[in-house]
Length: 105
Image 1 (tube, rainbow, N blue to C red):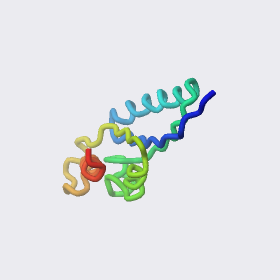
Image 2 (image 1 turned 45 degrees about the vertical axis):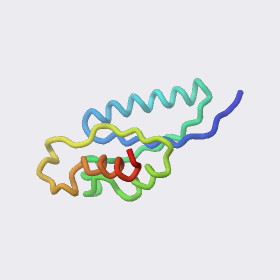
Image 3 (image 1 turned 120 degrees about the vertical axis):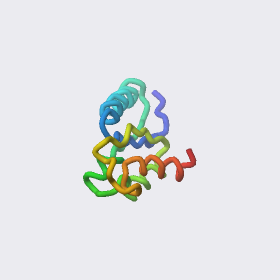
Image 4 (image 1 turned 60 degrees about the horizontal axis):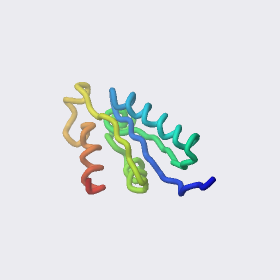
């Protein structure tokens, strides 16, 4: 059996429905790893409101650098009414905007 090069995938579930969707995506990736001899290295971290709740920042430097080093980033939904009154720099959407800008997407 031929093994392919390990590929780094960063899962960022985000908030609300994003967490449910990314959990299902993770199952699919794990299935490919176990049934199709693929070798995806899955990492998962906080982004958006979930990151703000824990770190008071919608994306930490550590998570940002993980994204830069990954070959794929799967990002769930971010934000929600709970965060509407935060200053713009702390809103969950800032994580998405930073990733798009810095990854040139």
